[in-house]
View 1: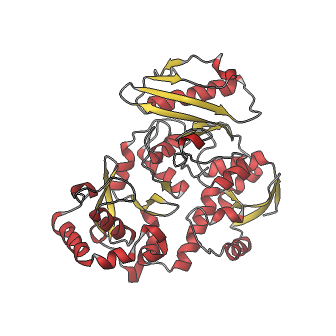
View 2: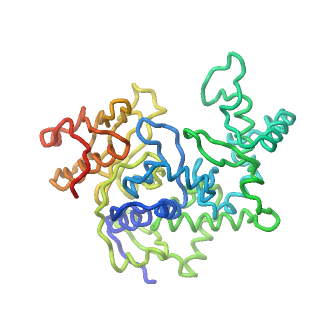
Amino acid sequence: MMSSNLSLIQARQIQLAAQGLLRPVRGKARFEDLLASIRQMSLLQIDTIHVVARSPYLVLFSRLGEYPAEWLEQALAQKQLFEYWAHEACFIPIEDYPLLRHRMLNPDALGWKYNQAWVDGHQQEISGLLEHIRERGPVRSADFDALPGQKPGWWSWKPHKRHLENLFSAGELMVTERRNFQRVYDLRQRMMPNWDDRLHALSEEVAVQQMLDRSAASLGIFHPSWLADYYRLKRAPVATQLAQWLEQGRICEVRVEKLGQLYVHHTRYSQLENPQAATHTAILSPFDPLVWHRKRASELFDFDYRLECYTPEAKRQYGYFVLPILHRGALKGRLDARMLRKDRVLQVRELWLEPDTRISQLLLDDLQRALTRFARWQGAEHVRLEKIPPELAHRWPTVWPTVPESD
């Protein structure tokens, strides 16, 4: 395919289409749509912060609309998904298990996620834990007591939690379900009874090639520097892979306004000939694959963004868990929101629009509708605004109900 010259808007539209964020979903979401959406993204990152809906549910809501959140746990329990370290901890389509198996067989390469010294020093206890699961079935970390006087916290895990996480990283245990979003671990042999490393495992070289292809398809359009980040690939042979794909016609070169040379995956070639306008407005998770690579979000969408929940409050520019706002092909703002579950209220503590954003009636209507749907899906009966730009303040009420829309 001949090279093309694209505007920045066209390049954004290609990536939004690849991510399932170009146009709003039509009709009521089905369970199959959830699985299709995860396959389209390749990865669904997991995070436990829940000032609003937890990130994996929110990422899916941004694409599917008001779907039943329990579908995600259902897909995991049905073994249509599995959990492992990919971009970070992710839900991954079960058919992609072979792509990650080489990491399980060499867990030392995972860094802090696996501690060989701990495993070597606790062989007897770890063997006993595996025997316990073998005889009595799946377990949670919560099933085991902490040591007396142990302080809570991410880096002060109790011994059994450390055992479970190391066994998970080494692929000896898998997550069979989530209970109140807590991992429930079972033996790999029970989860994948037909798996045989000698027959089914891929070499790291082949697995990396396939992960790069998944990344290219899920991005749609990409700079070489964006590609390896998707699965956190180290020393990936990106240049070699690009040359091979170009020869095979699996990608083509394009020149993009302000960005220079990028590449388009063959699944998006149709958009080079027939560009599609973006019409979707959505509240995004900080861990949405559209924005999880902050440099890519800055370069492609001119959106400088970072998550500030780990930044001391006094040093935050925005807020604890600020959500990007996508509006018809551009990232036009961000909001600091929290779900007051007892009061059934979505509290918008503050909302910011990007510089030079034009306040059109279309923007006002789309954004208010997106906030209403976002709130209603989480069980809120009202949206309450506290601090918003003056241009919005005199055109919106400070509180409005989330009654079902007539349309």
